[in-house]
Length: 74
Image (cartoon, rainbow, N blue to C red):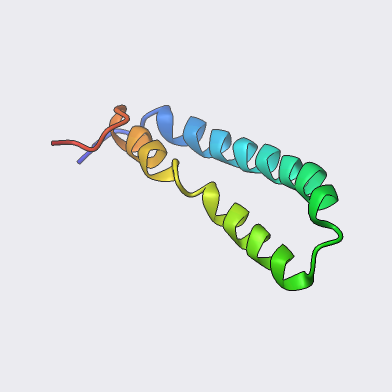
């Protein structure tokens, strides 16, 4: 367990926030125009999937924020 705060925590939080904003803008800008004519249920599926995709790299990112390594400790 870490005793002292590290620079990775605030940098990681700010990076995560910036990344999510960029991701949301890209999705809204490009995917919205692409699926505008689809039925509502299909749009819902696409947005739910895209809303969950950003979670895929989150585990390794959180591990890096805590340990400084990209893989879980052995």
